[in-house]
Length: 272
Image (cartoon, rainbow, N blue to C red; front, side, top):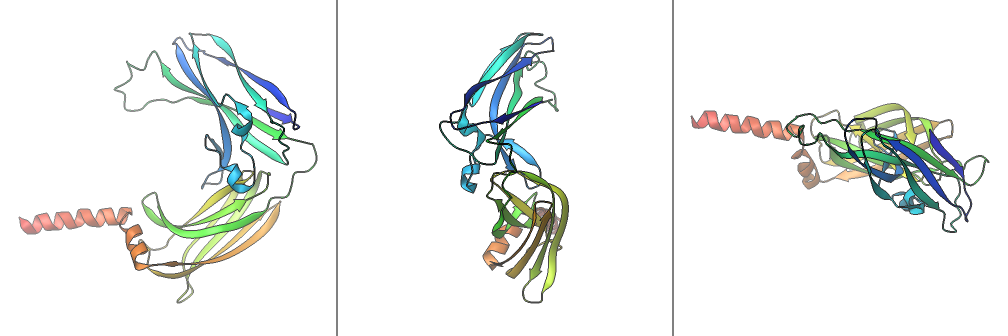
């Protein structure tokens, strides 16, 4: 169900998949090569953007042509779809992960369904792993990039960005994050998570929700414990939230939106 390939600097080969339309509609398919990355929910997902280079690695699409192609399939038709893998004399270590993704971009039912509120979207992905040997992969190496307050899902949260700068994917990761207010050492947010995955040469944004609705200005410290069968890491960090930054973030939260609605209702009632 996926390609697991041993490659060397001179490797150049064609990777072929058969894509079949089992429907009675003509379909237009977009086939794309995608790169691995780590999501904030702790899974390895895939995207067009090349980010591994920022983390001392190589993105899968660097070695694939074409990176994207369109395939038109008649009802019940099957076609071979090929991509060229070319290492371009580049020596790799560890592993590189990617996928070939096949997405339906249009079909004959599009016009008849254009007024439907819910549209189905079908995507098929075929995984690929590149390795230069069968020896044990390098050990992962994690570091804390930065900690900062942000708005996510309409809430003020603290985001700690962890980087894996090695060409190794691993799972079974447990993380415990605790945020303290420095003035009284009070816990203002904490989170425990299990079974996270981390992609090779990627960053993972760890999100910690606050125990209060609003972010208060002041000085904070962060303590993070990361454990897995591949190693253990401990990080400490500090950050300062200015009054301007706290105000800017709080104004973008769902609570600020609710307060604005309540204020509008109050003003209307008072006016009446």
